[in-house]
Image (cartoon, rainbow, N blue to C red; front, side, top):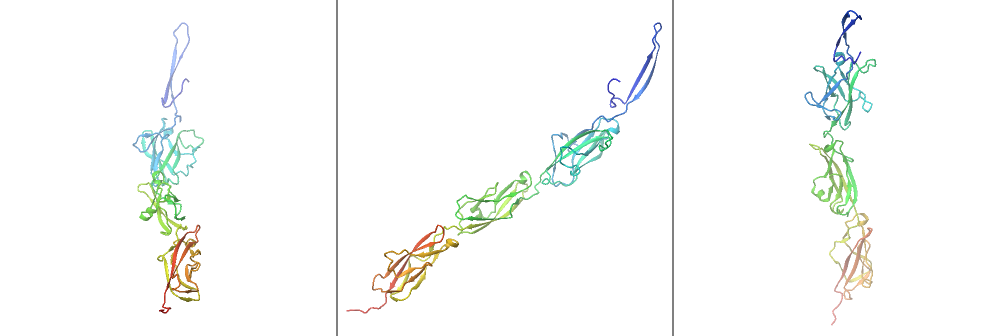
Length: 401
């Protein structure tokens, strides 16, 4: 035999054999016979596959393109396979397709949420198969799948005794995101203790939220609730969630500040979440003790002899700071003008009249006592006050002529 016999070119070959004798004197005589050789088909053609997204769409190059399906969809057809085989006999041209194992795939074909089914539509010798999702897909659990698809003939490729031709493709299915997740803060409530007296623009702390969606659906923008007071106190970086103080915070004005941080994704429509934020302002010693009495503080006492110390009154003093920063004591620094003063100040800021003989006719009739008020903060702050004592005359002397 010369050349290759191809069933697809000819299914039968007619051969004529001629026999001639050899003679020198006479014309040679000959005889001939003709016989037919029937060619049997062999499975020598691999199936050819054309991929389409719909029955009527244009073919796609599956080696360069992935198939896309939205998550949360009911099971559906994601791809059509138009399979043909150039073998002429139906035995070898009636191809079948399945999802097969692939050495580079980590996906177990028995666990892939896809199946292949054959449609009852034949276009001549072309068979139509469809790749179907077998369940609802969740992108956040699995964003893509590799489905190794093999089309073969004849019989089953699991039959090791059967020689067959096959064609395989590695089909990638990408699951498209929908905005089905709300942002979620790392904490439901944020609690922060911050010293008052911060600088304007100082960073306070950061809130964080995450969204497992993809693209804009998973992009988070932060904001604060619409309370105008909160808006005047704080700002938040829309991308990072860092909260900053816009003003110098004062514990004496508002010690506990509560508001909401909001995380909103970029989906359409967007989803959002809120987290409660509580800020406790810690006290610093920034308030000076203040004497609420009108200055100077004046006491009146009738002249006479007093044998024991007597409390004239207590200075009305306030310090808006907290704890030790808001506690204070009073004292005076003795000097030449106060050595003989009939009044004194106690640490609790009570003014006392000493045991003394007061005589309006014996100057002076007015005594002044400088008072210092110091709190217990660190460093401490102090203020001053003046306490005056007027000696009131009584009619204790006769007229002399």
